[in-house]
Image (tube, rainbow, N blue to C red; front, side, top):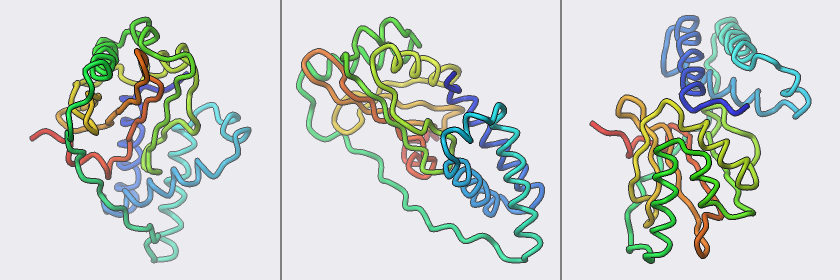
Amino acid sequence: MTDSLRELLDERRHLIDVATWLFGSETAADQIVQETYRRWYALTDPERAAITRPRAWLTRVAGGICLELLASGTPHPVPPTRQAPRPRSGHPAPARSDHVSRRFAAACSAGDAPALRAVLAPDVLVVSDGGGKIRAPLGPAHGPDAVARFLARLVAGVEVCAEPVNGRTGVVLRQDGRAVAVMSVSVAAHDVTAVWIVLNPDKLEGWHRP
């Protein structure tokens, strides 16, 4: 079953805490966690499927990386990331497309899987990007049933707000005022045909509330 975003954020916070405790630096801990997730994604699908407790596996790997770095005395080099600017609202979306987007946002806000299914196209897909900094789904989900279940599970336990994203109504997910995901949609006729989710923390700073 898909983890909720709240569970994935808790997992990442746990790994940051472990790495900070072992290595003594939260800045270094963030790099260590990024390397931990890189190793997760480097596994084959069968290898990941065989891991029944991903959080325990990730904790062991993060601890091992800390010990490796402490033994070598050299911090692990991680390529710098560039923050994406907050998307501008742009030109108003056509009324029909925006109506569909608002129905989608309302269904997400309610966590209503049937309402989500009603606004999704038969060939809808959802793609998410964690940027290697959070354990995001590895491949796109296809079809209204799978996508509706995925989204209803993902938004559980976080604040859901309908806001302009890339010139059309989208969805911003927040926890304690901090943006944890931004969703935009592609619309054709009366249906949502694709859902694009940004989970990478480096790209969400412009969406935080004071």
